Amino acid sequence: MTYRKPLPQIEPANQPFWDGLAAGEFRVPKCDNCGHYNWVPFPACRSCLNEAQTWTPVSRDATVWSFSIVHRGPGAFNEEVPYAVVLAKLAEEPRGCIVIGNTVGIDPADLYVGMPLRIVFETIEGEDVTVFRFAAADAAEPDEADAALSVENQPATVA
Amino acid sequence: MAGIERWNPVARPRQAAIAGVYTTKQGKLPDRTSFSLQLEAIKGACDDAGIPVEEVDGIIPLSMSDHLPGTTATQFWAAQLGERPLGLMETGGASGALAKAALAIENGMCEVVVLFYGKAGSLVGPRGTAAADKAPRVPDWSFYQSGAYMTTWYALWAQRYMHEFGATHADLAEVAVFTRYHATLNPNSIMGRKGEITVEDVLNSRPICEPLNLLDCSLDNDGGYAIVMTSAERARSAKSKPVWVLGGAESTYTDFYTTINDPWFPEEGKAVRRAANRAFDISGIGRDEIDVAGLYDCFTITTIRDLEEMGFCKLGEGAEYVKEGHCRLGGSMPTNTDGGLLSNSHAGDPAGMHTIEVVRQLRGECGERQVPNAKIGVSLQQGWAVHGMAGVLVMAAD
Picture 1: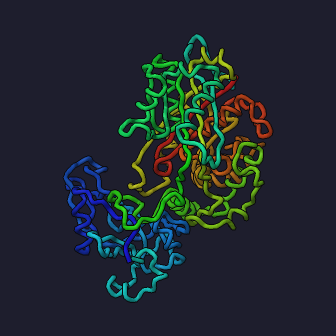
Picture 2 (picture 1 turned 135 degrees about the vertical axis):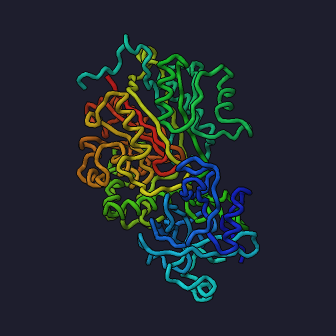
Picture 3 (picture 1 turned 90 degrees about the horizontal axis):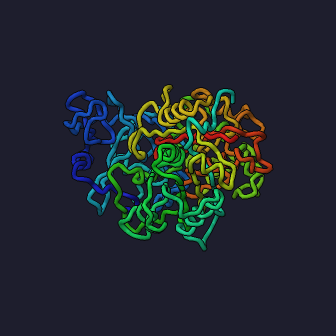
């Protein structure tokens, strides 16, 4: 089934991030001067305005910082309601990163603020991009999880 | 009011005043175009002021223009209005743009400024987005990849707020209840004819983006409006009662929903706090002097956060402030007396609607929903990210 939800129009400057997802890494620009992480990526560090930053793989550990269960979705998303949108806070500091995304393998009704999450990856069939999702921290690694999960529990991955 | 000079003709001979306001019909307007609503609003607000459209020399177009591709709305309207050299071209949110227009008028850059907006035939909510045949491509960090949209962002904000301050959905619902009550007293509101609602009605309405239900959300309709501002000297001889601009300010702090920082609700506040503090300082008005307020209410949570950031109550106490009845007609600061964006109208960019209602209140034109003896009012417009950009305008009538 064709994936019909929006995907990134990758900017050259951000290619290392998307390459990272394909390689099983979630890379965040880390300032070479002050060591702060910056999400979303900006051309210069927002703490010290230094332009030199390094795409740095992070632990992929995160917690739910906020979430919403969506019952009315735009475009193709409306075929998958209800689905969860989370703001996840990565474990890394300083300058904590809050990342928006969808969940995989989590019943939206089980979500709570502070719930431990882990970033996992999903290669989109027929497209040139790998995307990330948030799974429960105690879930099996994605390959096993993909096989084990029921469709109604993974609205974000119906493809 | 002691000690406040609303208009001192010696010290501030050119002090700006809102001389005209106008709203088109709001609702489903399938036979209208956005352009036609904007032009009607411009003509209507000028007529309300008694100032010929030909004398407009400053514009604040809040709508895009699609008539001449590659042409900005400002360029299009400068040409459409007759190719007279204009003296002010302002963009941005309504209350902040009006604050800057007032400074421009006071300092002689221009004489008559019109802010206007109109939209017909499109929807801003998810109903307006058709499913694509294949994956559309959007910018790298766009929230559209996650199926989020405006309502989702305010829901995420509400969820985090409820987590931090222990507020409940029933607390948020109180905003929809008082706002709908006001709409029932406004014959032009879209939802007034449906009658009052209860907290239970809000909690039982269908979920859109939890924790926000249908009745926590603003409307999604067509409509237009305009506001004419000019100098005090001109406003005094204009057709309608002038509403003096005492002061205003704007502020912005973040990008368009890509960067979110922890904390989301810092004690020192963000853009709305800064704009409000500056606007009250500039105008010399205290918060307890406000008779009527128009506070941007795209969702129930927004009004609660508005009240806190504007300094009408403390952080985390917005819901309690609403429950104490301050915002309801008859309370200490009736708020969104037209029914607001929740129950009067939200036509896409309703940034000027709150100012228009405050002007009508200060003129004493509000009939059943009139705040008795309303002399001083404030409007807050916010947008971009949640409370990402803010404008505050303090106004008064004689």
